[in-house]
Length: 89
Image (cartoon, rainbow, N blue to C red; front, side, top):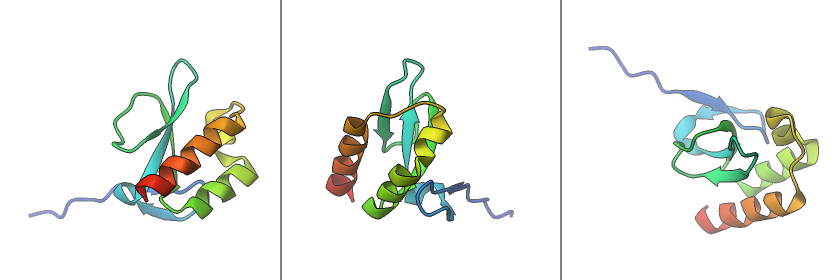
């Protein structure tokens, strides 16, 4: 019996490759709305961040999430993401 391969994704904050389940997905929908996807199933372009608020701060400072989505992200969205990470993490 073959062992199941674990999908890996890179954290936009720290740059480490981690199992997909250990990361939180940030999604940009077709309408351009950026939100946190805790289920990993929302439609749209995704970028992954560790559940650590420090990783989100690093990604925000270096604008890696903006680069992944090829568009500017307002500060309110980052604040909301940070709040949700603290609440869930």
